[in-house]
Amino acid sequence: MKIFRSEFLNNYSTYTFSFAEYAISESNGDISEIYSKGFLPFTANTSINFPVFYLARSIRIDTLRFKDSSENRRVDRKSGLTNVQISKIPIEKFDIDDKQFLDFCLNYAEERFSGNSMSKERFQYILRCGIATDIFEFKTNDRLLGYVLTVLNDDTLHYWFSFFDYALLESFPIGKWMMWKMIKWGKDNGIDYIYLGTAYGKKALYKIRDFKALEYFDGNSWNDDIKQLKQLCKRDEDKKDNDFFKSLDDPNNYLESILKKQ
Image 1 (tube, rainbow, N blue to C red):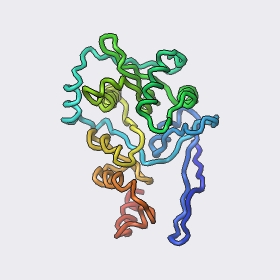
Image 2 (image 1 turned 30 degrees about the vertical axis):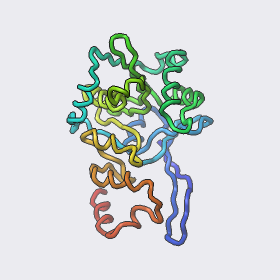
Image 3 (image 1 turned 90 degrees about the horizontal axis):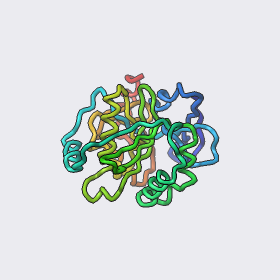
């Protein structure tokens, strides 16, 4: 992997100069390292011909510590689903041009994604950019429930994008249920960490509340202080004059904790 930084905002009055950080994958063998350093796939620019990842407040589940929560079990009971089949299909063996598949996913995206953020062009780019490895298909009694697009190897699973029958939302939160089923699949199949994307804003709180053994990348290391993560999410929409370090009442305690981790 290669890391590069791109200059962003600056505020000379507070000596705050920010750089966005990215990684380029050089082979399939560096994917686990890229995710472990807090990076996630960047696909907003469909003209990029390289597997680029961006650094963010990403979150993951440590499967060694993971246990079902009461909320997980409640949602499963509420689903009323039986005979659920979860099929893992390598992307190179999946017909990504199948009209039924494309229509299902794009109809979901049009209904659920904000600001047309998942156009047909971008979705096809994501399917072909070389980062996704497997598509999980959820069915029950011959009814298609949904798909999950993943990045998967021996120890890492990234739950990247999900698409589901949103009519089922009237009876139970199928999105949370599919995420839970994928975490359990990963644990059962010896995956060390399940990456669940980013945690920004109040809309991310459901992931934080509902899944045990969760930790987040704080810019330096993986942190399991869930109380602090909730506070960060709640203040994301506030106007900030300083970065997190400069806003601390006691920066010395923070610096001491950083030194202890290194």
